[in-house]
Length: 408
Ligand code: C2E
Ligand code: CA
Ligand code: CA
Image (cartoon, rainbow, N blue to C red; front, side):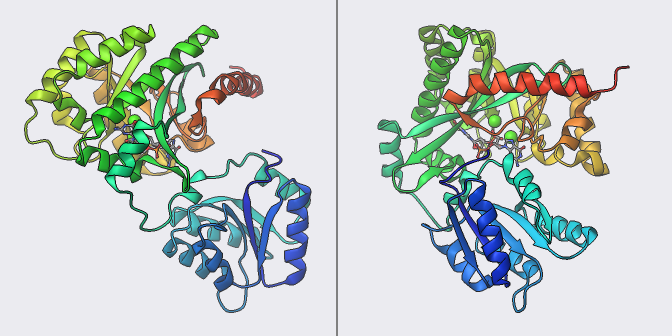
């Protein structure tokens, strides 16, 4: 991403000269919405302001009063959901440990810049950065009333984003997962964790799932017409699996769109404990008989567990991202990852690793026998009209990486 005038950036530094310099460098890189603050308190006021909330902050570590580390802790308290670049005159190791600390707070750090800041270094950091849209949506305490959600579903304010799943061994793009977003006319993009629970609790989940499914089928058929054959996955909550007509509805939706059930993956999660499993079991079994691919989502967390594997004929298992990201340097995660993988393989299932966030996660998967990978390292969820272009770019990226590898 080289130019993006709409992105809100904030520069925080106690030295007026640095503020000017960094603001100018950013403007030269095409960012036009750049604000500056010379102390942490003023910066936090902007973070609290829904209109000016930055999506990226360049933060100096050494400041009198509130220093950069304290500022970061405050950012978490103020529920900042954007990205961060650390700027400092400290040595590389100090910067690195500050970076680790910030990441432990679950704030995305694009990297660190040593003073004096070189334009080229700044350019490299922002170039590949995708502005976290969450920055505009994680405002504290925003709750929606159920009528408003019902209206959003009716009027088409829900849209599907798609995140690719690629083969670990061949790099081939095998499918996409549909992830719903609510494009709210005032609040911008609202993420599913803000409304799926409400839809489940208030009887809207069936309609919501049908909308997501119908759109996913239509988009899938359109990609196929353009020469791209993909499997498409849709999230199904256990709440959907109490309506006995669900298999029938799903089958006719697939037929109407001209998509074979084999190309449709249903990712099942159990968010709340189900008292009576008879209906879900019947429905899942019937869907399997109709050749839909059944996937157990978030495996290893919550209620997504061994009992479900025993009872439901799943075809695919998705290892939860909390066991994937960072597994290469954490023995505990690795043990859980390999146990899940082996279990799935013994049951003849296909395995997807979620949360492949960086090159280390990706390298770790190579040679493990895990079939598919999904995560920010490969791609973030994207709107329908970006999928074809992304696939073309990924193929180039993949073949370049293959060429760069030493041949064996
Ligand atoms: P999920 O099914 O586990 O989907 C994956 C979530 O992880 C998505 O969040 C995705 O954006 C995020 N993600 C992908 N790659 C990475 C990565 O490398 N690192 C990290 N940290 N996160 C990554 P999203 O889109 O916010 O969705 C959240 C959850 O909402 C989904 O979790 C799913 O359970 C639910 N959801 C989304 N769409 C639907 C839907 O249409 N119906 C239902 N019932 N639930 C949905
Ligand atoms: Ca999923
Ligand atoms: Ca998941």
